[in-house]
Image (cartoon, rainbow, N blue to C red; front, side, top):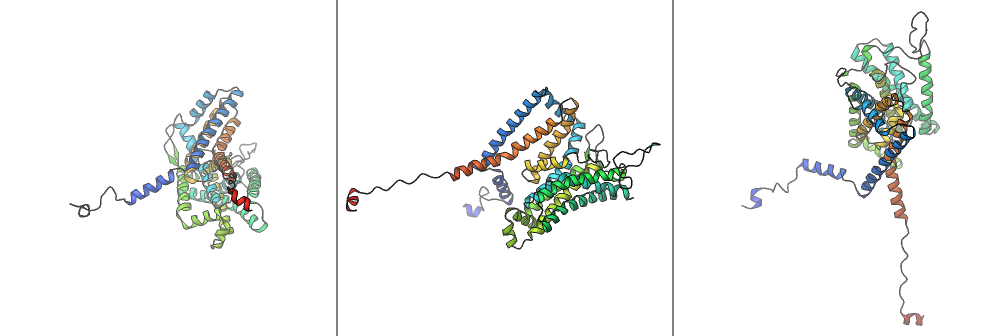
Length: 401
């Protein structure tokens, strides 16, 4: 029986699943520049870890004991895992917001202040409104997102009407946010806690949020506890990744980031879209502030130190992930390990600033390789080629000339 009569050969027939697998493999397969970048990254990460070990020895600490302390405080038991996952959620939210505005070519570096303003808005709503528990949690999270987004939108408006640089304005507004939160928790009629005891002394912090405004979770101490904030952050990362890569709006955002002039010629409102992405970035940072306020990672009180460098670390997570939301998931987990393990490490006598130095070295190790590869490739491409050899002229022609 012929092959035609028997039907198509299954070995040469491709299904939609096969085509999808081929496309995924094509994306995962790096080109020549990708291999060079990967090799350079491995070398720089090894150099960063080696330099970190040298710094630890110079301060009198043992590198192996420090690694063991970080492991004990972050991954050795269920308590460590719980703390690490609690730290990973707000870091991931800040990183996801950074990916949104970076896709549009907008550089937001004021996430630390936006986290604080989100916590301020969430605390005000949680302490002022009397609502049922589940509804109050939703309102607190929404208020935190709106607060952070509105704070970032001020920078977008300053750029739109006064031409103020976005990076500069978002950075400077961080210090203004810190002063505003400090004023709020130090003013009795605003958010300062109620006076305690007969002395009437009140600390510079708010009252704790009511139980109905706190995020729940799964598990119970001493077993592993997973807070609902982690699921919120994971859903945000997946949702943003899908929207940026699979939607018309995401295509416009990426078009603005790649070439705003071309995007404007195609009918995209560049200024409005850039301002919207900056506002969304602030909203994600504000939601991270609400998460810090309503999850067990903090005291559930608004304090001037509520953000605890989560905004800065979330920005670093986005840099290391190269503004890809899905890649930010494992990167935020690594930074959360350093945060939770670093707290345990500092309790052993090692200065905590060494953990910050290690994070900075790792960020450089992941960010610098593409720049080095592009620099080397550019120099090779700009190298002048050899001049062509002069043509050989016959003797008779020379004589005739």
